Image 1 (cartoon, rainbow, N blue to C red):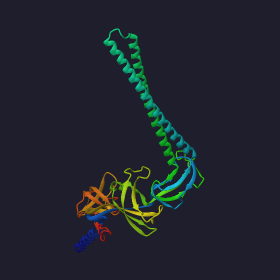
Image 2: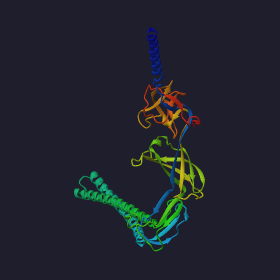
Image 3: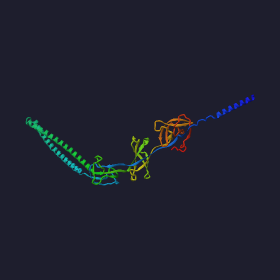
Image 4: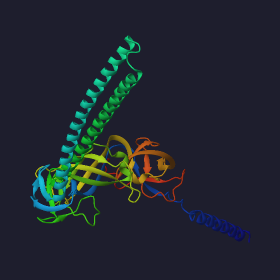
Length: 404
């Protein structure tokens, strides 16, 4: 009986040991660490190139208007003609202006005659003043030498004649001055009418090509100072030996635009590549488009480039050789006041504020906050927190990247 009891006890202990062993082997495994892609911060040569499309425009393009109204007596050019500066484009017939010139010329002659008359009047008045003064002096000398010989009345009459002669001389001098002013006015009017007459000859304001002709012989041309509904241009003239390209530079690249910066101009329709430079820029951002107008002048001496053609313009805005950089998607908050990166050190994430510099389509320059050789998390950073343990793996594009 005792032997049976001992056997049962041993069996119970064996069963309990088996249960404990079974429970220990069924414990849950440890949680796996999140895998994050990382890239190495390192030196790279960064270039900021901007490609924009622009249309060639003439350097100058104007509608040539007439200063005076008249009929077209002759027109010397037609569409496509190349003209030099000051070349005669057309001549107007304006008889009323010719009459004004003749009238003004006659006015100058009359004014000159008035001046001659006034000068003669001064000579007469001067002679009368001299004789009156001499007579008064003689009578006065006799009266002073022989008291009572000359009546006082004769002395007073001689003195009054002298004063009258001096007044007439002053009046003649004033008339001469008025005649000279009238002559100057007449000459000015004559010059004005001659200038208006010169406006009947319409000349090219600059060297260019006639792009449109509006008038023909006999057409009535209104003065260019009239309203646009009445005035009609004679021709349109464009300067095509030098063309403009106007580029809308985005606000993000405005700070990098400088006068004289080289640009590459690719005229796709002609298969030509040209070199140019930034000539001028507005230095102001348009609020509607958030762009700044920037112009490039392109010489066109052979006329092979035609206004209206499109060109691709490559702007070389910046070049930073061997600067510390990270992939663009490693930085959070680009464009805001605070930029941050997630740095992985010994399997632990550390959130760091950084200062960035030049930005390219794939990489960004880091001025502070990251050291060369440190691993930064790239891609989406959602769910990551400072101090979290992670399993870092090199990003797929990092292995083949040359950081250029």
